[in-house]
Image (cartoon, rainbow, N blue to C red; front, side, top):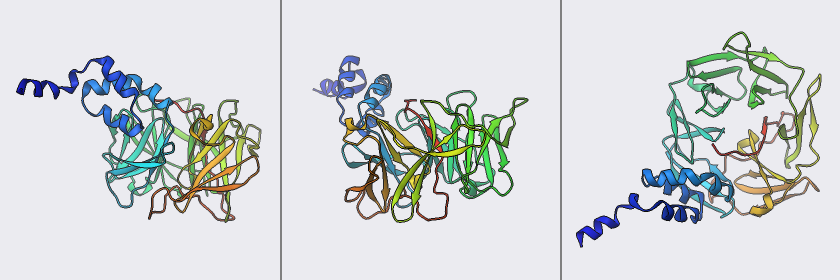
Length: 338
């Protein structure tokens, strides 16, 4: 009897075909993540099928924690429920190239929520300027960089495999957001001015320069959602290529839905949203912990449900204020698994 019990506990020895059948039938992403943490063989199977699995499930929202904690809540758009996840960090300050950019006390931590691959970085020169972050490319590539900055500041901290460096924005600039677009980095000021941050051709030093030309193609755009006081999301603009860069109002998102993140600092697009019960050519965002949808077809704003999480106010709340820029700069691109 003892031998049977011992054999039953050897979950790592289950045949690959059995594990493959099990993982493909898991009901949610949180179950998928838990499956991959059981043992090495289960993790190997989960990594082999993760592209197919993730493509069959709607995205998750990472809700903010009430107090500094290692427990985070993921909200399922499809299941309309929250699930807890334990991550080795206390605060999330960005998501880029498949990695959550988090902080542990004063040092950044990059973690892929699907594979749980984590990269701990050394303490940055200035810990106060670490409220927002983005990556230039996936950190498993040889030439990646991490950019840390605080909103309305002129200090940019750059981490490369060789170490930390500091850059200052042009005079009188207050940095609001950054995005990586077609091998270049663009930054947005409080007055919706745009500058190009690129690698200098003569070396590895990062330098700033204003630009009169912006990239534009059919597959990806730099978008800027704008808010109007008391009405939530009202307009979406596209940064168009011209001698003098200009914001052009987007009349239609086509067959995509736009999901705005915390205070509209970044966004994600979902192709064919009807598959998940959402409406195409629409914008989804939160205000005071409530879900809203605005259709670009008729500009109507509809409240979708009572609360994301009872008794809290989501940090994804949309920013208001007439007279402020109200723009967020980010790359409009197809989602990819990393």
